[in-house]
Amino acid sequence: EAGVAQSPRYKIIEKRQSVAFWCNPISGHATLYWYQQILGQGPKLLIQFQNNGVVDDSQLPKDRFSAERLKGVDSTLKIQPAKLEDSAVYLCASSLMGQGVAGANVLTFGAGSRLTVL
Amino acid sequence: AQSVTQPDIHITVSEGASLELRCNYSYGATPYLFWYVQSPGQGLQLLLKYFSGDTLVQGIKGFEAEFKRSQSSFNLRKPSVHWSDAAEYFCAVHMNRDDKIIFGKGTRLHILP
Image 1 (cartoon, each protein chain N blue to C red):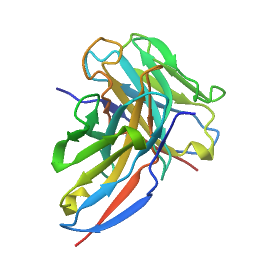
Image 2: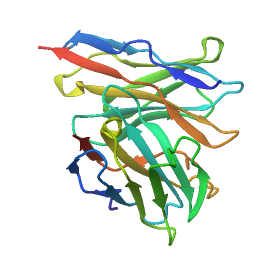
Image 3: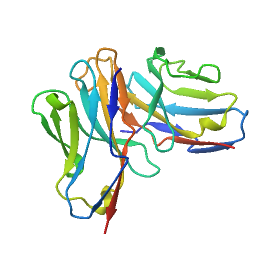
């Protein structure tokens, strides 16, 4: 089966510019996650969707970050305006969480989008 | 507060030696437990998971982990490491009360030839 697709793989921008990342989860996975991984740290959950509804966005800096999953399939994460501290890898993952399937909480990750803010 | 602790930021072992990576969690109930591995430039890949039952679980690539409820630990082990095991390893827990999955800060494994 196809994995979780993310693009772009790399992006370099200047501070105060905007950037958008795209994610296409595994077909049939209702739950989609965006994680931020700063160098030397573990992934931090930014937002979790189930279908097109938000389950958790408590750690999303809503003054500059936004995310949507309009049709319950692919998702876009946007940062506007970017700050230096936003330099990180943005990981998208998907799972069968909430679908009543055994092992549904196993996450499948994409390769990530590496953002450098200058 | 719920948390996952990986006390070792870096570990270096010689090829062929045994390995143990530590993970402790703080949670009021028994969570679901995972180990993921991240090779350079790659996303995270599941190594193994513990949901219930036998507290010693086997994973891919010859890894195993043991859940110890009394110590709130889920340490990862491998009897003999290979150079290809050099990567970053993340412990994760699923707090099933609120469906949150949180990750430790990771342990970077270096292998000496």
